[in-house]
Amino acid sequence: MTGVPASATGGTGRPAPRGKLGTAAVNQASLWNIANILTMIRLVLVPGFVLLLLQDGGHDPAWRAWAWAAFAVAMITDVFDGHLARTYNLVTDFGKIADPIADKAIMAAGLISLSSLGDLPWWVTGVILARELGITLMRFWVIRHGVIPASRGGKMKTLAQGTAVGMYVLMLTGPLATLRFWVMAVAVVLTVVTGLDYVRQAVVLRRKGLAAERAAAESAAATR
Image (cartoon, rainbow, N blue to C red; front, top):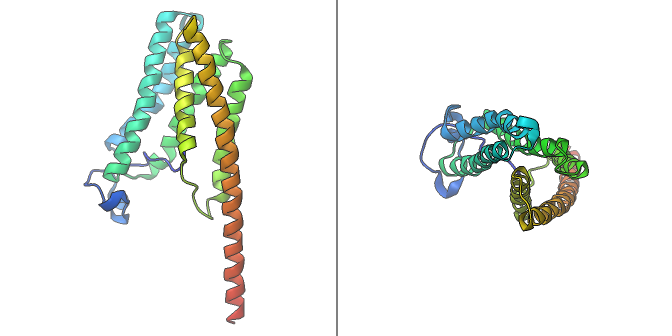
């Protein structure tokens, strides 16, 4: 769940040269393409995942295993719709909006459900969700100056979060229960560190954008 959503997609077609999206590809994109369908599946899986997780009070190992399967499918579709989008130039406005919503919805559903069951401290859920919401608002703050690309740290953060939540969904015991604690700890650290780095990049980008606007305005005034 990082950067410009890769599954902002639609239509069929051959890959554009060097993986770049062309205007024609965007205009010809169809809503009902495989990448968008995968995003829709992920959205539908969110309530199903929650229902499975909370069945029988949320502490039945069998139901939790089914919930984990639904969560795993959602995470896998996130990888594939992005890959298909980049490869086949499938871009739609629906995908641009729905993909990040689906990503955040499945993660938020898992975190909130686990905290409500007492399996995960609420402060962990609060830190992760506050970061995601804050970065989303930050994107709107700097959008007219440019887009900050997804970083390797952001991708690692997403992987760590997904792995940790998946491990908490399963009712693990013994060493595996200890391992999931440390995986979640890594996820929280990456969440905070990458969030702070994004804020730094956003501030720098905005300053450069404002400086460029001032220079352009001064240049225009000087030519009058």
